[in-house]
Image 1 (cartoon, helix red, strand yellow):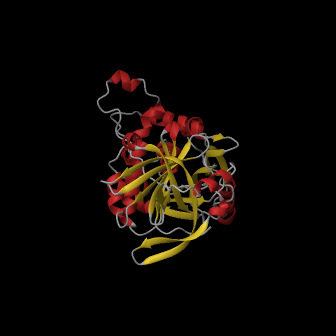
Image 2 (image 1 turned 60 degrees about the vertical axis):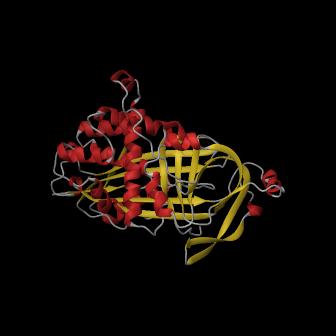
Image 3 (image 1 turned 90 degrees about the horizontal axis):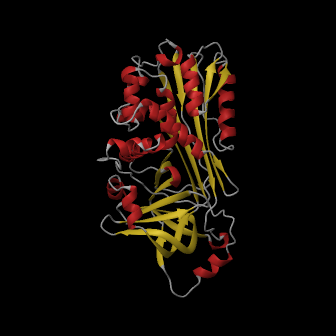
Length: 412
């Protein structure tokens, strides 16, 4: 049996961000068939994508209660949806259900078309915003992919096929790592430590984001401050501060404050700051709060916003984590991936890496912000000096690009 190597990764370059959670309800529950038929394929996959994002987050939060978490649910969903094109029978069903899709309510065609529309919408670049997603297949040079598999991946996922000599492990590893490094603007290097000679195919998805804050931070206002990791641990971090109007919700019952920090363009960083000692309680609570609920509760308010300047990175071994969400067979000897080459294959590795960088960068002049901070009437102070949650949201498509938890900020 030849093995199938599957690699998933993502990367974010963020200029001054913060984290939060958006749970989207099953908006279409109770709608009639005509209304559902009017939805675009992209709209149809949104509930499943959100469900997967928070199912995986919830699992990881329980598995690693005291660690930083950071991943791209969009990247993982896209890559496994690509894989599902070549899956058959129970293997394919497990992938779809694990990704949050109810197969009695959505078709395989709509799933593929939905990701096609999402990829097209996300590949957007302006002077203030860089957002791009890329897919690639590194194929053993003598392998013959089935025509339908090749066409579907090209048409729906814009995936390029790259011939690779896996018998030369070092050369194949360098080829793949170079591709990844280029697509992530040098932020992810040496993703693969080795490539086995029995490898047939490596699938890659990268997502790259670089944004400019709508309201820039003044670098001269950044100062060293305490960050309370827990009751007994305090670390020093460079804290950025700005006084500006943001959308904010003060959730006294849930024990947290939510703020929407916009980038220029159509993306926002949503940060949820739990009350002291309530991180895990808030993590559980936000799983049941819909995007619409947060939006209805948020109001514009001029606040003093303080967030740390930091970097965070995380690598997930999805072969260990996804079986706990029901995606099991694809990693075992009973995997049915016969739609790829017609032969018996299985996933031998599934790696996901994400990187986040947060700083003051912004195109706007900062003089006004500095002056505003010195006003006599002090506004509500949103001070992220303790663990917080963060979500990067692409608003036009309701796509959760990245999500996670910052327990201990790392220096860049």
